[in-house]
Length: 312
Image 1 (cartoon, one colour):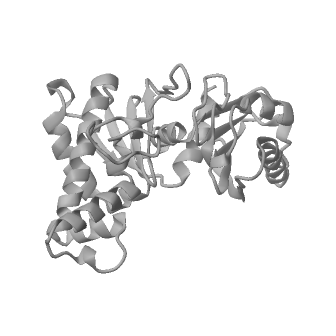
Image 2: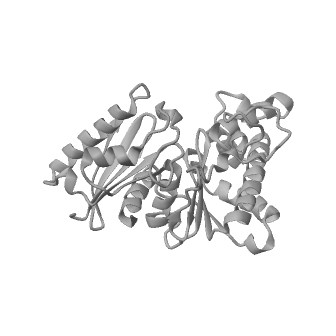
């Protein structure tokens, strides 16, 4: 083994990859993924791309020290994906299949949100901490829990599904998971738009949000300008996310919370307002937790994959 590692962060439209050696990210690249492809086709494409990229640096793929893979779905401790809706396949033994294709034993597979949290702990917003909870706010709400420097997987590989914690049990609208009142319905990009449109329909308040398309970005932008209706929407978002983090703290007792994903681009308005509600709802032993923004952006997942393989 030569100390070279590859991280592979698989998404619904692309797989981001990185070659790492001795503290240096030697090469970053990506290939498209297709929901219509089988898992076999996806894995074959990954291996081909890794082999080609390694070859440019005189490295044989079967001499790699390890490969870490992030998948958008529940992953067991032995590297089996239980379901991957974004890639349209069910149970797949990703670790075993990749080991056979590549010819090495050290292939580690994890949920994409979990590995992103690991990446942020290693090189990002949670650097220097070992007990971390990361919440990603995008189209949905994802989560990752790191305990003593290791990803918490859970018995079925589905730990840290923070987005589907119930915060409003009497909510009538249905979440994408089939339940009602999940935090994803209030704190995701789509959830924030849902809140804004409901407020616009129910209220007579004047608002810049009545002009043009409503998005999570426009809601936060207008709230920063003092738009009363936008501020009300952000306040609702912050209240429910603060409650969620307080509940998570009661179970995991992290050193720090990280907020990432596309919505986090709104910046300190999120950490400030969520932090206010967090303190209101958290038990006394948990009130002093830091709430920070993630810093690695789209690199968090692929960095976490590398770290996962290095730690194996």
